Length: 86
Image (cartoon, rainbow, N blue to C red; front, side, top):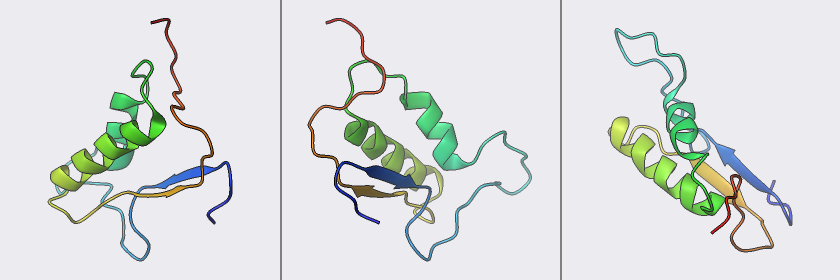
């Protein structure tokens, strides 16, 4: 699963279920997607940093019941998904 040049982000750690629907609510997305969508368009931000912020926010929102897991085999630094001129 940990291939050179690949980065795979999972909504939760292996063996831990995702918390997708808070009690009494019908959200459009699960916690991971909610925070990923919030941060993924951050200009010139490395994807590893974005996923770190997403991981922290999911952990806080779920009261540590869900913590995203990342398998990082990227070979380059500073890979951003939304580049803007500096």
